[in-house]
Image 1 (cartoon, helix red, strand yellow):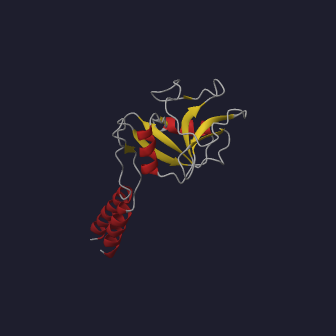
Image 2 (image 1 turned 45 degrees about the vertical axis):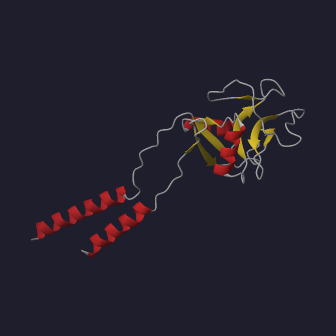
Image 3 (image 1 turned 60 degrees about the vertical axis):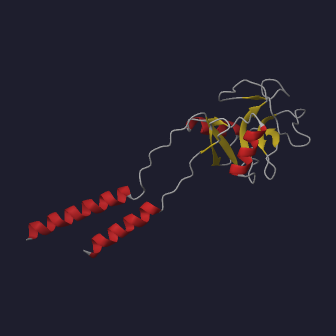
Length: 184
């Protein structure tokens, strides 16, 4: 019987340890946002956001910018969905509902964008300020995360971390009971 109590205790501990951050909704536009921490190129971040069912963030006004800064802080550099690859100096959003539209709101760092440098086509949020900077999209060493935006979000139904352990424990108890009954 000690074995069964040990398994059940381990199951309870394991079930309580599962945690994940879910996207946060901004009331201003009803969209959902989450940070994915990784050192990806801009294209890698674009594919990552798409694989999650979202797109790289498109910041369209000061209220949305303030929400992002207050919710996620500005201690990391985040890729956004902005670039000027089509026409140097004409920044637009590459994905989401704003895909192909030029910026109507900006929060450029002093001296940015630096459109006179070839290849600095992709926008990220600067650490410490949340201001926008344009950099080479192949430089994943510069950017430490990306912001995913969803126009709608349905949270996944999580499988409790302890469920597989509990199922295994119940299976072992049933096996032990069956074996004990055969011996008797």
